[in-house]
Image (cartoon, rainbow, N blue to C red):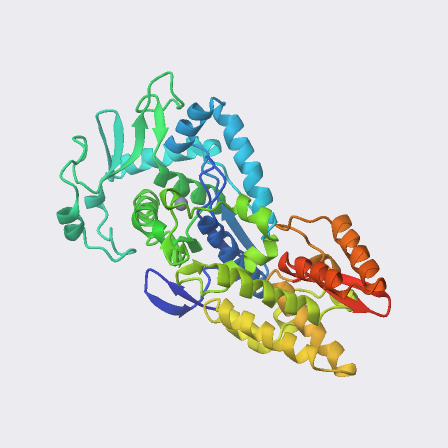
Length: 460
Ligand SMILES: [Zn+2]
């Protein structure tokens, strides 16, 4: 069995992954709040944990990957009000968009995608347990988690409670015993969205949602809990505290895996700076496979800088991948097992998902294939295809990749008309006009290739 090493934010070390039960791996990743299209930063954990899921599936006989959908939240309520639509209509539309956008990134569907509103009962039950265990209290219609009752609170995110107190804002809500206490249940007006509970009509806090759904899906502690590094505190710290105190676990998860954040051209993405991009927008500009490569082109724990240059380089990389497999479509269905992969490529992934090294290895393999002739080439291509597809690349036939016009303001018919016009110009010996057409197409991202059977075109 292959040895996987993973960095855990809890231990702050790269560790050999030792599952609770090697027959069944359990992974949970915090999913989106469905009030709008996700931004490209939130697409990163989708792809990163998809890679981890693929690696785990290649090693272990059974893996359950759960990713939740937060479909109750103040942001959702505000947005529905603003757009004058029903909350359920808004969340249904956003969930559908999310599923189709992440599918375009060649991400496998998690095995379970629980929705918060389907688990209000589980949340209420967990809050009742917390109250019974002395870890939660009621105040002014709220139920709060009492962080002083969890003696390891702060250990996951490596924060000291005293430091947190000192740093807390002066305006702590009157109903909190400690500034770090957090809401498990909050009251709502009867006209607002809410549910009946033993503490009156209201809504759950955000953190309790994940703890309750993890318990519902896995019935116990899990191997891996994932999400963006911005979720480490307070979200994951609070999830861990709730599950520990309600269910008497030592830890909710054995390994806490976090991806770094995404910035754009060296700057934090923000709507006010005009550099805020949704995945939906980017999918209008470029194929999902390209976005996937960009998102994996920096080690998952490092920040990822989304730049024009990175987009360009990544497209060139994929062009090379597809060029290396032109003409060998029958080899595309190799099973995603480690024994079928290139060994250096597999080694890189097992080393804390080093996708940078794995992609570099794919590039080297593609380069070798392009300069190799003879029977050896076929074997190399087979290994290359198995490896690239393992990581979610080479999803298309090469001709479909090179003829993908996403983000280009040209249709196939228009390109063919231009090729026809160029050939007529050449026949009339008007080489200047012919070159002009070629150069115009090149500037739009289309390269022409003259061959024995006429002129072909491809996206560059
Ligand atoms: Zn969560």
